Amino acid sequence: MPKFFINNENINDHTITIVGENAKHIGSVLRAKIGDLIIVCDGNGRDYECEIIEISKKEVIAKITDIFTNDNEPDIKITLYQGLPKADKMELVIQKCIEIGVDRIVPVKTEHAVVKLEGKEEKKLQRWNKIAESAAKQCGRGKIPVVDSLMTFKDAIKEAVGLDGVVIPYEKEKENSLKTFAKAFKGKSIGIFIGPEGGFSEEEINYAIKNGIKSVTLGKRILRTETAGLVASVILLYELED
Image (cartoon, rainbow, N blue to C red; front, side, top):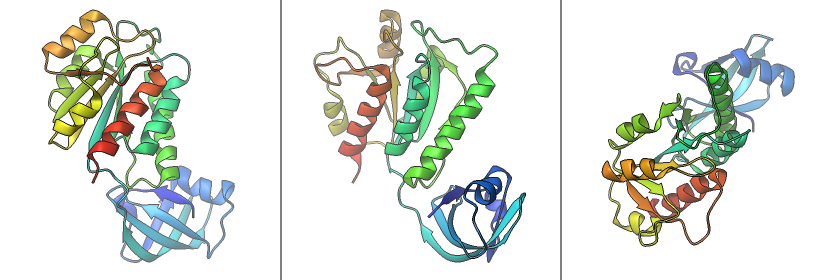
């Protein structure tokens, strides 16, 4: 059944009004008809099963037939601080990490990053957040995770230290595994720092550790930037979810 995210103000006692791109998609792409069923999510963990009762090019009105709690959001809130990768790898990172349960993604400008977003950041963010919404719909999330504005490495570290725990996978780390970190972890919010191609510089690693970030190993093999965040997130969610 097709799923759509909408704002709370469009939800009434018995009906839901869908406008904008979602209405266009329902009418022009899905070619839905009166009587068809859809799922609407308010982004706060509540899903509505609805029957379409009016449809036009600009809006769709649907009658609420059932309401149920969406319990697909992980209790552990992971923020992925992703060093900007080349080409369209960021899109893959966003799509897959949101599918497995990452709560928030922050693109980070690092020393080894080749990609420059000057003059293109707003357009990129719009596209990245559309990918996030599409991934959230596909996998049945109860909210649309946010892809935030680009941060410098130091600004990202400054923000991340406010979380309950933060890790930075590092190929030279041989002792502290992510699994060991997870076993000792007691909080609810975790930050993961992933470098771009070429990884983090020694200065960045030292700065992170100096600010209380835990360096960890993800295993004996060196992972690509588009793989590392996904692997780290899966490990943490598996180890920490009830």
